Length: 161
Image (cartoon, rainbow, N blue to C red; front, side, top):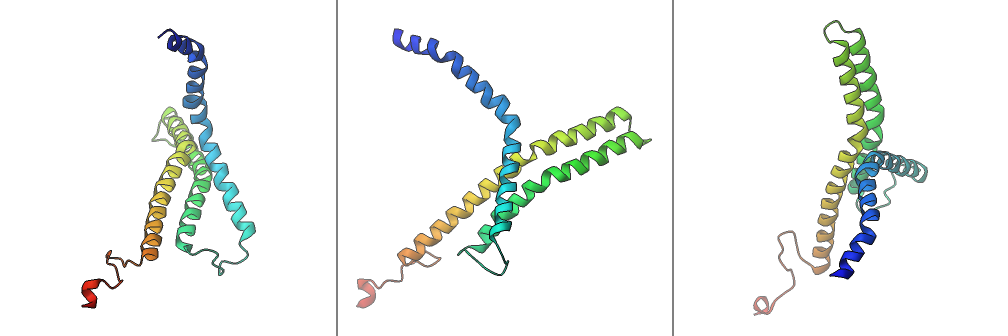
């Protein structure tokens, strides 16, 4: 018991600081990390793909789907800036919306679009995981000689008689 208590005393400060770093600092930096990752992947695709007619993969729709989500993530921030400017100008020049409400809407829009890559990336990862599992199951079934209904096409002893 004394050894465990000693380990707790020894590690409580570093563990607490790491927890705060993960929950606070990482929460505010992860949207930028996600956005720059999409930017880099799309830029590399642009350099690598000389023609849209060439299909370099067995699953072109799957690759298109992943790239399309990267494009959505990349365009979220420019759309957010446009929405912010529109909301800000509407708040300033509108006679129907109070100035404070217009500013609050504009900055709420800016904050929402800043964190939007997190939810978009989560959706992308869940859907890509689902598609990857479906592809893996399809490959396994093809390897084992099963059709879509799960029936084995190999002859059995009953079929031979």
